[in-house]
Length: 479
Ligand SMILES: Cc1cc2nc3c(=O)[nH]c(=O)nc-3n(C[C@H](O)[C@H](O)[C@H](O)COP(=O)(O)OP(=O)(O)OC[C@H]3O[C@@H](n4cnc5c(N)ncnc54)[C@H](O)[C@@H]3O)c2cc1C
Image (cartoon, rainbow, N blue to C red; front, side, top):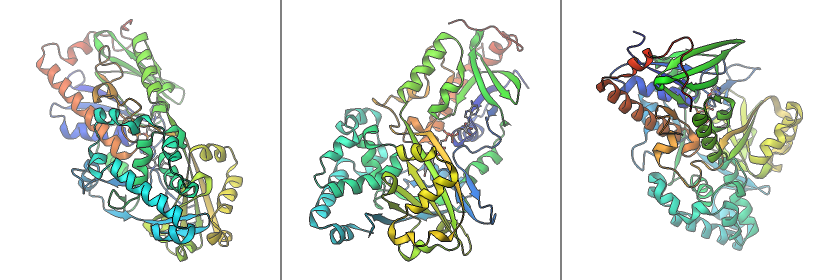
């Protein structure tokens, strides 16, 4: 069969790479050979559902926490995919915030705890934000319109300066910091506002997968017909005569080389420079691509198992915000998993604080984080049984889509002229979420299919061009 079917290399076995391979299986009527290269020993990327050492029945998320439900606004491909895979979901609701040691569940609590001026400033801000981005605009976001929007040109810190009440300003920052994963000067007013509005229940509902978010990538992996190469970090990609690509991967100390018709790079932007993009045109295109989206943002996750979920006496819901570390989301992991008597609390620390704390040894860091619990919860910190740290520096994007936003073709093809068969897929091209990765995978699969069908119709198909290069070494295109 080799030489007859279209060969596609997918670099990266995270959600993006798995979605590409799943969609190719579904849509590729002409048949394709897909090979997924994954640098580590597991598929799933930043979706990680883990278990406690003290009791393996205790589960929690160490990576992606929640999914965003757009189904009330229109078609929602991620929700549809999750249903198609036979997975059940459960809603994630906010319990509010503990801000300056006061419990705030709604605007009325703000008035009671912080007074009329703060309440008014917050109410006006929310009204303005809702007027700036309606739910429909949020859902339908169009890159051309986005580029004309003054909010896309303004930094979020500049926008917040217009909030006259300092307590209200601080509160908004607390609510958004975990979502944007960077500081307010590192993102746009529009991205900041979108993340603020996401906490409004009529804007967006959140959900997780029953049994763990990692079931998504596990189910995708089970269904893929792709050959999966674990522990194969791709080290170089090179275009050959005839337009084929030579992909070289490292497995322990051995190098492995293979030729492909198409390459789909399903990596986070920060991993792109770790590959040698050979040849002047390709290396220049990938350097430019990386630079355009180079807005690194950071997470640090600390997950602690306690003998009981003591916080529920104060805070309900699947998550709540606290103002430690510039604004941090606390997930009640035991609300979404059957964790018996135990309570599991997951800190999602973001931005500069994630980098700063990430430098500390785990034990020191865990102590600092638990000690920083709000006063209403701190008395129970001695109930800690076990804690886990997961560092996610540079793993997400603080200004997804970049600015100005690009049209879908150049977004997904770093060099459409010289490298029409090399694509990129990633959340950083859209909104830093799993919904965005799926949109991206969908766009790329459509193009691959279109080009593949065209090639089959042409007399000089891909198989022919594959035969013009020597499979062992091949002739390199010199550009
Ligand atoms: C802490 C945290 C919380 C998050 N929370 C949410 C959330 O609540 N909701 C949401 O929608 N999104 C969330 N995200 C974002 C979400 O995780 C990403 O959108 C998603 O993982 C992106 O998928 P990906 O496949 O593009 O990249 P990744 O998940 O990063 O997967 C890339 C894969 O490529 C592999 N790789 C890297 N280099 C190479 C190489 N040279 N060769 C081969 N393989 C390589 C990696 O090992 C990895 O497996 C969160 C992210 C983090 C870090």
